[in-house]
Each structure stands twice: as structure tokens, then as C-alpha cells.
Image 1 (spheres, rainbow, N blue to C red):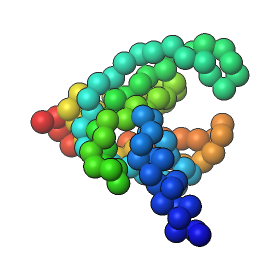
Image 2: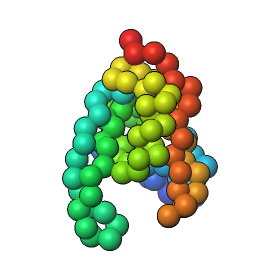
Image 3: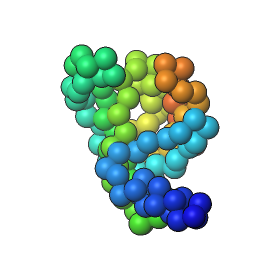
Length: 112
């Protein structure tokens, strides 16, 4: 039963248009396709501006384009400091939960 549930969860995660990570999880972004500034409802229901990274990632269904949204200046500064640009590859890692969540960027490769 556990294998069936795990398979279902992995399939749904692969099919999703959004990249989501659990505490301690990381994902390799093969290529950054685009960075957009969008406005969407935050957890409190108020509209806020966030960065949407459109990323190519490897999933159990093959290479897929997924969105990753983040509204913190800290994350934007990290992307800038690490030299992430359109065409770059990198790893995003998540540490913490809820308001203590932090995303870090590592293993940046040059834009192709």
C-alpha cells in the first residue's frame, strides 16, 4: 500500500505546474527559462509581488517546465549574488517550515 501511495504522490508532484519542496529537500534546475515579476494572493489573502522562476527540471515523467514562486528580497539577492541568469542551471534547497522556510541556491552553472 505504501508503494502505491508513494507512486501516486510522485506522479502528482511530477504532473504539477509548480515546483514545491519539503523541508530538507532540494531539486536540480537544468535550465532557468524565465524570471517574471507577478502579483498573487499571499497566505494572508493580500496581494503581493513575487518572483516567478520558470525552470526546466527532470521529473519521473521526463524533463518538465515548472514554476517556482518566491516573494522574499533575501532569495532575490541570493540569485543575484550567485550569478543566476536566464539559461543557468542550479540547485534550489529548502530548509525549515512555514515562516522559518529558507531557500538557498547552489551549484550554479553558466548559461548555455
